[in-house]
Image 1: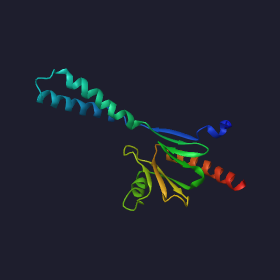
Image 2: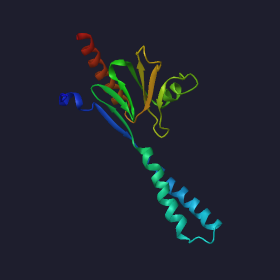
Image 3: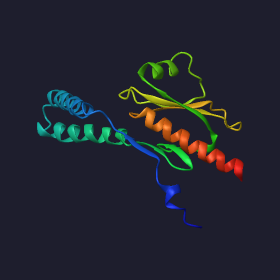
Length: 166
């Protein structure tokens, strides 16, 4: 196995889709309400026990939800565990909130790959031209749609040029 050059391994775009700040206090509030309900319903339990269980649990439930990673490298577009070789990208459209709503609305293709975070208003639509794959496009939420679209177009054009020259 040969080592790849640093230019091919450095990410052209990298983003982590975290939860909004208000999700953490809301989760704690929901945990406190559940703990209070349980404490009032079972007087034989120590008063502190439901809070000691539900408050940390409410935060632990949210922890994996804020770990979604969006990354563009020289060879592929990664969204969490999904990977798309960049030579299959034909076009990329940066979407504002209205465009995202339209793409994900009634006319959405049923085979489209969608990673949508409701707390993030913008997205990109990545159009594919892989005849072996029935997926027509990807829609991925992002806080920086223009930057992501530019990086994807640049990397895919470079990969297509390399593929046609070889």
